[in-house]
Every structure is written in C-alpha cells, then in structure tokens.
Image 1 (tube, helix red, strand yellow):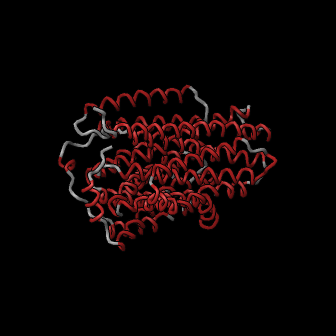
Image 2: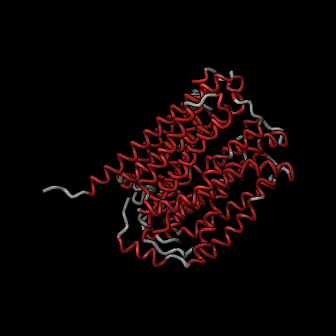
Length: 484
C-alpha cells in the first residue's frame, strides 16, 4: 500500500470541502451505504409473498436475493477501479441513478424473471455505492476526522441492515410487495441531489489517459467470484458435485486472474499492493471477522426458536439487536479511533468479538434469552469497533489514485467472509447438532450445535488477532533502520 507523502496529506486537508458541503457530502455517502445495505436485507422478507404472487418455486424466488448478492460480489472491485480511472463522483452518480432506475423497474415488473434481472442491475448500482462511498471519505474530510466519517458510514450500513426486515414486513402488509423496491426511489433521488451538489468535482488522473481498462482481468475476477459465491450459497453447507465443480472453477479462475494481472499493462489490481503487510493483514482479518459475524445470523434463529422456544416475532426482535448496537456505536467508535489510533482499536474490537464468541460457546440454555443476548451484544460491539478501525487503517494510507480499487477490495473481503460464513458455519452447526434437518432437531442438540459453532468462531478470531499482530510486526520491521 503506497503511503502518501506528508505534503499530500496537507493538500488533502486544505482542499477538503467547507463544513457545510462536507456535511452534505457525508450525508450523500451515508445514504448510499444505507440504501445498498437495505437492498440486501429488505428482499428476504418478501420471498414467501413472491412465491405466491408469481406461483413460483421457492428456489426460483430466492434468485431475487442471489442476483443482488452475486452482482455486488463479482463487480465491487472492478467498479472501484473504474472510479479511480474515470472519476469517482461521475461513477457514483451513475451508480445511484442505476440503482434508482432498477428499483423502479423491480417494483413495476410484471414477471418474476424481470424482478430478478432488475435486482441484478440494482446490485451493480449498489456495488458502485459501496465501493465509492468509502473511497470518497478521503476527498471530503480532513485526515484527522477520517475515523468519524468511517463510523458514520458504518452506522448507516448497520441501520440499513437492521431496518430491512421490519420495514419490509410493514410495507408488504400495508402496500404490497412492490413497495419494498419502490421505497428506494425517493431516497436514492435525494442521494443523487446531495451528491451532485456537495461532492467535490473529479480531478484528472494520469491513469485516465494511460493504458486501457483491464477487461480480461475484470471478466476473470467477476467469473471467479460468481462461481465461488454460487458454490457457497447454493450448497447450504453441503458440498455436492455441482458445488465442488464451482469451487474448482473458482480456484482455476483465481489462478488465471493472477496470471493475467502480471501481464496486463494496466492491471485491475496491482498485486504489489498486497506486499504491504498491514493491508494484507487487514483484508484477511476482515474476512475472518465477517465469517464469524455470519454465525450469529445462521445459528441464532434456530437456537432462539428451537432451544428457547421463541416465536418468529421475538426471534426477529432479538436478531435486530446486533445491527442496532453496531449503529449506535459507529460514530462514537470513529471518534475514539481518531483519538487513540487504529491499531489499539482493532485489537480491542477483536478481543470483544472473541469474548462474545467464548461466552456464547459456554452459554447454558437455562440462562434463556439474556444468556444469548448479552454475549451477542458484546460480540457485535466488538465487530463495530473493529470495522471502523480496520476501514480507517486501510483507507488512511492509500494513494489517492488507488482508493477506489482498495475500497472495493475491502468490501469484497467482507462479502466473501459473509458468504463463506453462511456455508461453513452452517455446516459446522449442522454437524455439531448431529442432524441434516435442523428444523426437526432436538432442542438440546441445537444448543450443543450452537456452542460448538462459537468455539470455532472464537478460534477464527484468535487467528485474526494473530494475523493483525503479525502484520503490524512485519510492517514495523520493514520501517526500522537496518543495522550497519
């Protein structure tokens, strides 16, 4: 990761927007993050309704969720790189406009396949919004306030995740399923107006006039990520022949992508970036942490319903506590990061996640809902602290001309962790519960499966701590003067 010179930091701070326009710019970026997260979480609640409306199988309707997820995952690095080349403001406005148009198309679609196509296009717009919102922080706030801005974006993302299921249920009950897509339109239009008015104009970059865009690398990476995401999401924790073929295809695709990048005149990702131990450690830790976070979403509903006997409404309420905690802690965590630095905050966050996972691994059913909620709050709070610190650490040291692609890679590591966590932690939970049919499992078996799953989760966070500590030690060794 190329570290900007001190004079570049001063120039960035001097050119930062005025306080009023900076607030408007941050509002546009936060709204972009909220909408992209809302697009992920709001559609799940509509799947039972859509299977009835279109008289479709659940597997077909589930592509409304998968199409969005696959497009975001497979394109987020490429759109970040494109923003670095053609201008982040221009591309973010295009992404917001695309998201708006696709939301309207999904809400008005007369057939299921048209909803799915619109959702794929919506996912492309969301990928632009996710990647460039984080990349834009360095252009709109001084370096000393980067943590607070990252905390605000984290809060917006958590609000979108928490709001999706409840808002979706209300909209479907009151206005029908089309409202869950049409509700995005006025919000996205507001983000477009704010972005157009408050975001700083694009500056010409040397790369815009250099070698052409890496089309081969873009296609190879998109195909590789799509194959991996499909293998993880379609398997539901079981590695059948089709899923195994997709995994093999993704491994081959990754090899071809790396080979293509070494030959490209203007590579999609400069592989030398990963020679920075801090960046590599941050990306790997982000993946591991996201894998663990997914365990709460995979295991939680079954434990709460099967072992503790809660109805669907209470299960949803308990599960929403995590995103609410993350939303409340985002901005305060950013202020602390700006004050004490990213290194200590990353460690504190990881220790919090590990503590929550260990407590869940030891929780007896006799403690009931409080016995699950308290450790989950600790885990989620640790996640919120880590995310703000990690995002700030990664983006604060990036060359301005690489912010888009690094932001895309950072988002990709999180998405891959969530996708992998859904499959791997689900498989661990099923194995530890001793049954392939969790919905019919004995309550005691589900509780045992939950505890075993979080033993694995705690081990993954210990690995993340080792990765972060090792990355920092290696970076310090590189910076230390060589003895004569």
